[in-house]
Image (cartoon, rainbow over all chains, first blue to last red; front, side, top):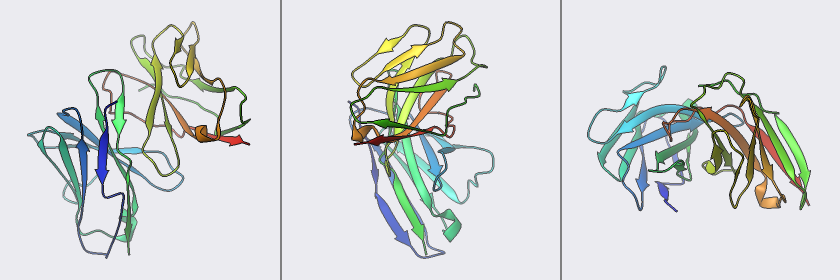
Length: 114
Length: 110
């Protein structure tokens, strides 16, 4: 089946630095990808919709200048957490819809800001 | 998106069937019912989906009430690897843009 790969699986960074997370669709093209965030013991919350070749669409309350999304190709979307702070520590997950009936999710990236 | 109600948690013994209920009384007539599950420290994975008829696949069965206001995910023989959070997601056709509720935490005992 189709696979979505995220990298890195986990990352620890210092407060004030930026972190880039990659999301790749390995065997299919994805003009749209989605980025979610999940805090401990909570459900997934949609952050933004990544659109290939155009600006991302952010959900209400998500700072677009803090969470930079780039979708430069049909198989790659990146999420950059800029000037990260401890409250940005979370589990970040991307997904891409298939041409069928299901969405494929990456394995997630555990971000810890110290 | 339709509002969903799922039990916070359920428990099962290994090799026994598990019935995971979901109420979605505000679902629209054209919304499919999707089920995903999330294993610990992983991204969600698709389980099954349906519209009106009951559905079966290699992972599970989906029983949809005639009025479509509720559905039940059936795992025929639970294994330890089925321990996960199960999400019921009635929604539109924007697959991938999914609105997750709290889901049901399934614990499987050996």
